[in-house]
Image (cartoon, rainbow, N blue to C red):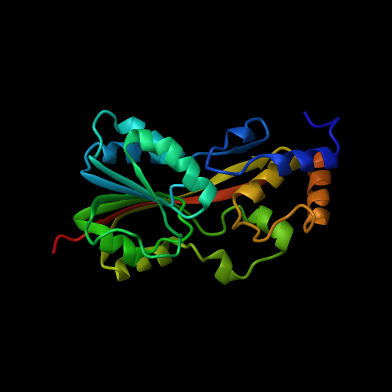
Length: 261
């Protein structure tokens, strides 16, 4: 597919693709990632159908929450809210979710949630940067549920380490499920179920790598094509010679409950 495309052509293409939202359809034919077996968005929709007041934290462009709401329809909570910290995503999420009756609130990812205590019986999140367990516990009603898919430890680190070198154990284990379970329990929450999976990813050209690193900005902080041109060129040559670059994502499914006591 890229035999007649130069390194410069592919890098320019990857650098030009808009990064707003969590729509990954551009990667079709250029990169693949296995999906977790539990089907997060569908399962979230089933829970939304039974909820009274629901919040989606760090909703991105609202695509996953929108799909979950469509799955829940016509039964969905009368009170629906979402937060997002990146202004372009706030705009996109508002346009997508407002027709479904969702109030989208601009809120920094590291700030307290802008809602009253015990406002929601269901809190959702797909790939939060960091789960703020104390805030999640505060806005949940007694008996309420936090249902979320988190990024796990050392996710896509084959790619990360190609660009920034070997990472220390503290970084590799920063999202370890035992650590996140401990954080939830310290906030007074009960982890009812916790599942983890390691999933194969393939990058078929360097344009896909460039777009991925621009979109998922925490993988290689400060990534730019100029700053990492040598690593990009080396990876391009490797893909051209050996075929797709293989990495592995890690995902964790949290089903967490707030006690009624």
